[in-house]
Image (cartoon, rainbow, N blue to C red; front, top):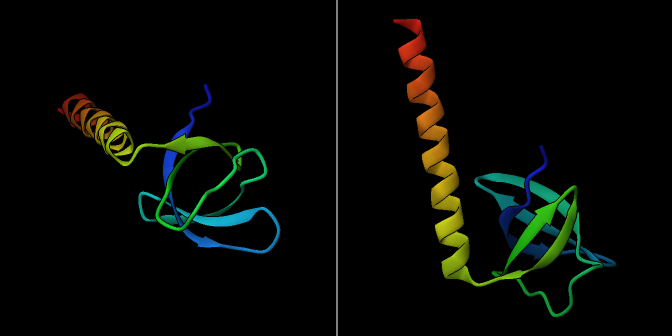
Length: 82
């Protein structure tokens, strides 16, 4: 399964590239599919490409859901050990 993940643009680079922050992990991506992206904007990232810009509130909700899923996985792993 492939996921498209919200990421915040932290630096614009040469060409159509940008550095984004994916929950603390920095990754260089292409902005060639999206127009008018600025530092601080959130974009949906899939296989190294920004697919579209995302409202900051929507990005926060989506990232919170991903966080909850991660916590659920940790709880499931812990229960399996006991």
